Each structure stands twice: as C-alpha cells, then as structure tokens.
Length: 437
Image (tube, rainbow, N blue to C red; front, side, top):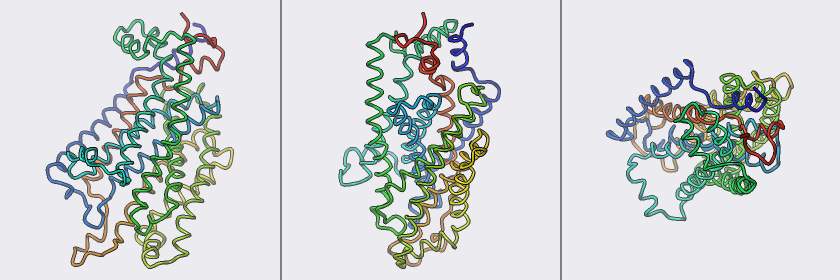
C-alpha cells in the first residue's frame, strides 16, 4: 500500500463501532424525551416552563445565544485561516465547519421552541418590519447558515471524488459520493472555480458572522434594561463567541483524535496553537467583561446597582464567580504555560470553557429580567425568581443532544480531515491533479 492509499484509508469515514452505536442511541433517547416534552408544551403552552411575566426569556434564549456563539468560530476562524494561508489549520478546518453548521441549525430551531405559538412564525416573514432587530436576526441567521453549508461543502468536492473510488465495493456509498462530487475530475478549470468560490465565501462570511452576533446583541441592548443597556454589547458578544467556539473546536478535535486514532494528523502542535489562541481570546473577553461591569458600577444607578449586587454578592454570585474564575481566568493561567497546552490539559480546559460559556449566557439573560421597569403588583413571590423547570431542562438537553447528533452523523459520512488538502500538503498528490486514477 502506497502513501496515498494509506492516507485515504486513515481519513475515509468509518462505520460506527459498539461505542459509536451506544452514543447515537443515548443521544436519540434524550431527543425523544425532549420531543415528548415539547409536544406537551405545544398542547399546554409555555406554562410548563417556569417562565412568567418577569422572566419572559429563560433557558431557551440562553441556549439560543450559546448556539450562536459556538457557531462563530467554525466558519469565521477557518475563513480567516484560509485567507491567510495558514497550513497548520488544515486538519481542524472541517471539524470547525461541522460544528458551525450543527450549531447554527439548532440556534434557529431553539428560537421556534421558545415560541408559544410556533405556527405564527410565518407572520414574521409576512408582516416583518425592517426597524426590528428580530427580522434582521432572522435574515442574518439564514444567510449565515447558507454560507456555512457552502463553505463546508465546496472543499469536500475533491474528497467526495476520492471516496467514490475508495468505496468501489460498496455500490450504495459509491453512488451517493459520486452524486455529491458533482462529477469532480480535478481539472484546472474545476480547481480554479472551487478555489475562487471558497475565497468569495470566506470573505462573505466574515461580515455576516460579525453581523449575527451584533444583531443578537442588539436584541438585548435596545431594551434599555439594566445589564443590557450597553453600547459594549456587540463586541462583548463577539469576544465571548470566539472563546466559546474555540473551546468547542478543542473539545471535539480531541474526542475525534482519540476515537479515530488521528494522532498522526491532529498532533500536539495543533493543541499547542489552539491553546495559545484560546489564551488570547480569553484575555480579550476578560477585558470586555471588566468593561461591561466597571462602567455601570461607576454610574451606580439604582437599577444597575441592584443588578450588579445580584451577580457579585447575591443569589447569582456562586455561579457568576464560578463562570468568571473557572471558565475565563483559570484557562488563562493553565494555558499560558507550555505543559498546560498538552492535548489532555487543553481538552479539559476547552470542555470547562464550553460549559462556562453556556452558564455565562444564562447569567446574561436571566438576572436582568428579574429587575423589570415596572414591578408588577400583587404577583406570587415565585415570579420574582426563575430557575428552569424539569421539562425546560429536558427540552434544552434535547437541543444540545440534537447538535451533537448532527455532528456525529456528519463525522460518520464526511472525512473529518480534508483528504485532498492533506495529500497536497504532504506532497503525495501533484498540484494539477485531484485524485490518482
């Protein structure tokens, strides 16, 4: 077996083993449980949640913001790395793009889950007003999804042609890979068209990616509520999204490296570079966090003071400090040292960052809503507090499981690491040929 055939064998999609099947079964079990709860929500209404007139947004919107954040790094960082010609990132680009597609799909579905009357979604398109940040959020999420799918698909064309021949003993797989390859033969014209398309998409997705987080931030900032009334919210969301997305890529790349024995392709060097990148992103996000809390503390209005006290020393203080210290400061301390950027420490830090990022969104959404402009008189004491109900948790876990299932299925049928690009970089394949005949 020559080097080229060995490369294809290593990187071609493989069937799930026992562990993989158990993983898929576990995810489906959570998803079916979530669907059952969602049917009850459709029949009964949002009363099954603990959201009331005070906390009209809750865990669903926190989850939406988290998915939007995770999706950023997949397409944006890979687009920037592609444009800059950074070859070291080749083994990570497809992993990041798969995460981006899964996350942005679930971001859109999470919004529908949060709607008490989802059948009225079409009214947004029929009666939408351009003055509303909500309609812009819908437009930019849809645009981002389309570009992300294309940015994932176009680099796969040569790989689909390679896999079509690799699975010559499996007619069904060969047929599908042949159709997906769009008759790719690797001609100079095809390569020029593919490279030009990828470059255009990489340029397009940068402003769209910044736009999706800025518009999402506007949904909060335009309400004038304490904790949200900030011109800093746009860059604050973008910086946080970079941190969450980088943590997500690190976590998934480590799991895939172990599961598919990709140590020869995803090396310690990649974890070292991603660790350094995560330190930089955490430092930037820490700056925006300081700015986000220092300015209202300096103004010290009654509303802002109550909000900050709830975070710093009140009912949300344990969670707040756990998120800030554990999900932001601790990663900086660990990853700044070379030993902390080894694969296992980086993976642990990345996982902590992702978990911290989710709870950070919960802290952004919930505390502010419990300080309304006009307190409602004579309401139950329980309305002054919010914590998700069991059904809310199950539905939310169902969305997270759905995102993981999408990633799992894409990993099952797509080469996790680009075969053609890797072969080119290793000098196994000539620059003017996509595949060997």
